[in-house]
Image (cartoon, rainbow, N blue to C red; front, side, top):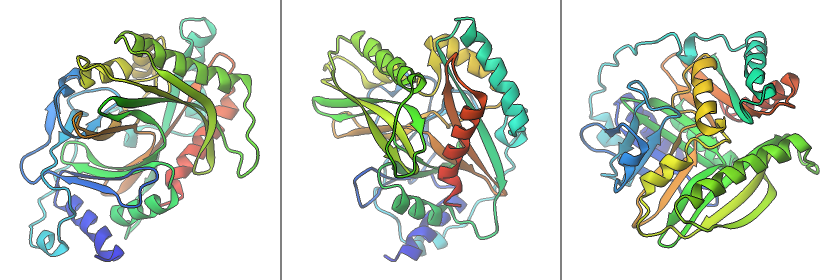
Length: 362
């Protein structure tokens, strides 16, 4: 099958509103593919409902009726033939209702970001929050001839150290991204999560880390250890060390552990998500502060996605550098972790660099 045919297949699946996901994991040459052949993905109301489920999971930052927790059933794991798809009639695409917090309707310029930044700094400086993540989105016009399928293959070739994915369901729409951050991966007795926090954009030179980035990374690592302890898990720690993702560098700590037989994966995910790397600390306070003050709905940005199958293999990644693909626009997302010592200029610059991860492939 040629590369041209592969990208046309992915585009045809989207046009025909088929529920599917394709992802290329770090270090692997061939992507993994799942497709649901009939019906709609399973919709769940909370992460604990993932206990005993199997399939490709698409979880939002915050589960709502418009951004449900989805499980795509893996009826087929091989790309279909293009000729079979072309015989299918593309359904009428209904207009998607847009609410006031939809990314397409918000102003995401520098002035708006500065105002949000000052608002987010208030609970940090008063001590109510230790850390909170402020994100933003950037909407650009979808150019004529833009191909989600071709863009996926381009990203897979460019970002070899990240999980690169493309998924579509009628409920979520189409999303594409490249993320270096594992939320939970494992099989049998060997499992792992990751603390990934702190960002630098050093080009190819030496990476040095200031106190702000080191503290941010420490907060995420400590949180993961506390959450795992509640399940009587004693993890093995490796790190922190510097890793690169595209033009960016991050601090990373690997947290490896054995998952007790009696521990359900959904319950563990409920305890881990959202981590301080995408939300903040204290967990519940930061989460609700973001919902109340960020000014738009993140939807699946800073949620997580990947294959869930405790018996075979689970590979779930935090949805970081990503875009939502619509008929006439592309919405790119990025965020950064704020501490009381954060600088608006530096945080804005960090989000610009992160948005560039997706921007460079469109």
